[in-house]
Length: 104
Image (cartoon, rainbow, N blue to C red):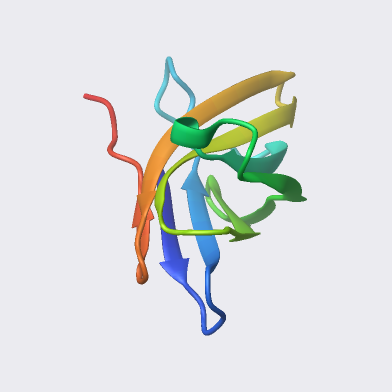
């Protein structure tokens, strides 16, 4: 799950990313990953360079991203730990922020 909040800088967001194990639901405490972003409606035109996510607390990680415009973005999380993986989640970003909708 992703929740991005606007900072005092235009189009800069602090994103909190909550990671849980798919099978147990337990928080993932040893994640290492970077976060980048791309606009699905204009793939490759508005892509954001990766930034490192930092462990915040109990399976929550923080990444500060700078976007180019409001709208729907695909956040791309490239993991090195706990295993190599790529997770993509769509978020709709407005002036105040935005987030993902958890899957049931």
